[in-house]
Amino acid sequence: MGSVRRALAVTTAVLVVAGAAGCSQGATHGPPPVGQGRPAPSAAPTPAQAAADPGNCDTHASPYRPSQAGGPTVDAIKARGYLIAGIDLNDYEWGFLGPDGRPQGFDVDIVNAIAQSLFGRADPQTVHYVPVDDDQRIPRLRSTDPQQHVDLVVHTMTVTCQRQQQVAFSTVYYQAGQRVLVPKAGNRSDESGPDALKGKRVCTAVGSTSADLLAADARLPEGQQRFPGAVVHTEQNELDCLARDLQQHRADAVLTDDAIAYGLAAQDPETMVVGAALTEEPYAVAMPSTSKDLVAWVNQVLEDYRSSGQWKHSYETWLLRYLPAGQPEPTPPPAVYAP
Image (cartoon, rainbow, N blue to C red; front, top):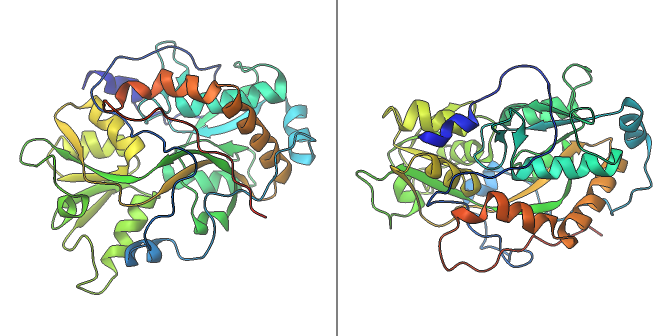
């Protein structure tokens, strides 16, 4: 598990850190490529998907047009002198502590681009990173306690209809999907995701869309369930699912986004990702619903991030090395705005 040490959970208070740089050791597994342009509409959602995320919304569109005119939220952040960003430090190549003790990774690069746009630089004085678990992302954004509140979250966070009712999202910066991680021993590489979960002990992160999907499936009548007999256990994060459950034979499988699952497989060569994507998981930057000017600001940052080649550079630095051979050249999801 050599590289797991780089993704150890950080449970202390706010970290004040600087930019993301550096490289990592190679591996044979990694997240699938981003599709060309906006993903094609998928088939009708399964009963479990519909139950896990009720509502009729466009999870790929942001209602906030890009602008850096500023406003009360942006002005307050500038006056404070630093950005408070919620991130994950347990996601291999997305957010982790580098050799210098500072956060690095694909999501961290996006935070640094936002800080650069606000202050002209991204360093320990202008970015305060706060490690947050999946189930704390929305509570920290909605908190009125200055000791708990964060300005934004960049944390492999899927846009869902339910979440859109609680916080505001930028345009999508990455398209993922849920897949299943299992030990190589005793499992087939061609096994489907549902078959890998039926009747199995399954671990997932509390507060994740994977946990929502499993819970919704279990509530369905017999005969409609995709994962009948699955016994679900949750941990605070997916790395704990790997180290505490899968490797200790307390779980048979881990369900999570493929962007995370392939990172886990890269850290443990005795595991593999099986099956096609079970869902669509569009990632975006989350902010308080009252921070409309900040969302518009971030959308402009993402517009520049895509067009300048920064997205591609970050992808090649952190994620490209884990792609299976023969995949198409990845491109960032284009910005989509609601009417």
